[in-house]
Amino acid sequence: MSMQRPNAQVKYELLEDYYSSPVLKRSYMWSACGLALLVTCASVISVYVAMQRMLSNEEKRGAVDFIMTGPDKFIPGHVEVSRNRAEMYSMAIFRDKNNKSSDVFATVQVTEKETETENNIIENNPLKLVCYYSLPVNGSTEEQLLPEFIDPLLCTHIIVAFAFIANGTLQPGSISDFEVYKQVVDMKKQNPSLKIMLSIQCFSNNGEFAYVVETKISRERFIKSVLKTLNDFSFDGIDIDWEFPVWPGSDKRQLTDFMKFLKELKTALKSGNNEFLISVAVAAPGTIIDKAYDIKEMAEYVDFVNLMSYDYHYYASYLPVTGPNAPLYPRHSEHGFFTTLNTNWSASYWLSKGMPLNKIIIGLPTYGHSYTLLNEENTGWDAPATGLGQMGEDGFVQFPDICQFLKREGTKVVFDDEHKVPYTYNGKEWISYDDEQSLGIKAQFVKTKGYGGVMVYALNDDDFKASCASTYFPLIRNVRYILDDDQL
Image (cartoon, rainbow, N blue to C red; front, side, top):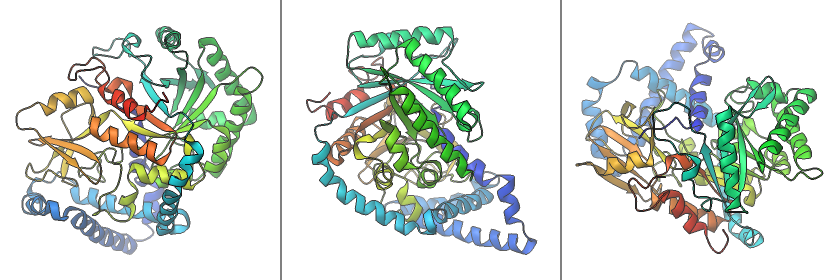
């Protein structure tokens, strides 16, 4: 079984696009001497970062193997890639607010201490289990999740993904999509408390959404089309998946326009007889958060945000080493910017910036990321990789495929007690993923900290036919079991 590429990948491809843009390149070429100095410094930083991250106590042997055997097997341009990675991550650190990343970390740490005291305030609020559902693709030969296979009692909210924007209006899809909408909405007959929402997707800060929010007239036109679609199909609300406003640019006006849009959207969707829900799928890395959102103002207009706390690590030319898809916490060997690449940090940062605790819905993935190892003897975190793995599509692997991989002769599984997630490998195939144990730990984390609930991406990637498990949707069902404290 293969899968369609999860859309959250785009935010990390944007990182690479931004730092390889012609404008940025020109800024470095102020003189031949300056460029030579930059290359030299970046190379030194690259070697230092790689050595520091790989030479942790538990991975010394693997790191030494890499040093001894790796250079002969490097893909072309590896040194250049490492240099670009060092530049990208060092810039990301210094782009934090006021160029003081340590201040950001301190703020988050204080917020985490305060989180426990806030639990008493929101303990009576029911936890949400928000499940994204990707529309079936017509003509696909792959096994797909059809509406009749969805358990209407499993989630509190189902977000149907995705609708798009064309000519400044919401385009809900094709006629075949309309039938799916009807079938999903009809699930409320079996579960009257279930909320069905429609997600709007845009993957550019200069695409259709940028046009929509630009003027009051364009915003009004688009909101009118949203309201019509919600009423026509009996949806309960709208989800905005714009990846991302402003970032990686610097158009602050776009951020202001986006906030105006959300304000006007709330006015239209929550006036008169309308009580539609509004959610926004939001970024996890701090560098994007600081650019893309006015969080305090956003909090006034949305019912909740779906934090995309996954894809923290994925094979890319600027970071050709293995890493966890969705770690809960950092490892002790991680430093600086790398300590922010985890669910706990991202959620705490959103809280510290002004999003209410009960409006933060923590995203959990039901898919993993595959890599091709450079050296079969170096199999831990930060192991050099030569590319995406053979499993999945574009390195994204559904849970049923991972489950089958685990049954292969010679497959090894490691559960990391710091990140609280597993990884598995066999030969040069290496996969970071989540299982029932890791997702259960994260669900318990959500309850303990007092966040508003869990978002799952996606229903489609769980074992919806019980092909490898004893029950349907084993991952999501276990999350529900942990969250369910006479609430759901």
